[in-house]
Length: 126
Image 1 (cartoon, rainbow, N blue to C red):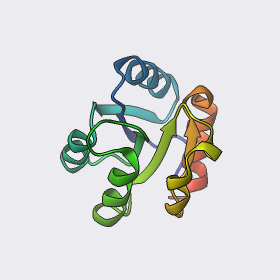
Image 2 (image 1 turned 30 degrees about the horizontal axis):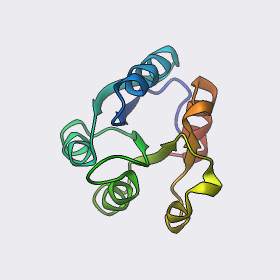
Image 3 (image 1 turned 45 degrees about the vertical axis):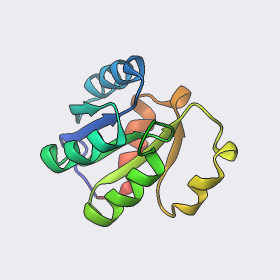
Image 4 (image 1 turned 90 degrees about the horizontal axis):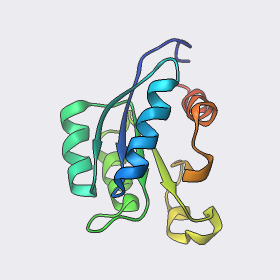
């Protein structure tokens, strides 16, 4: 179990700059978490994960090019120690392809906040 005041490194991946700003603010306002970077596409996300080595990646499901589901699959293979959390504006039930990703949490952007961030990390159990 991670120490409560650990400095969890978080990368935000979303093609919408507005959400990346909001996510960064939430991360920085949550004790024990640090925003280490951001990416606007799946391709950029893969490069940034390799470069920054975040412990947690917030990953938008729907992006042009490589979507979040494909990026999550690739990260599970190349960075299994990294917690990947899929984020979407859609309801979970509206995203059937996500069901194929066993063990990858999916949250709604509307629900994202400090409490949910801490909960996701504590459930990860690293």
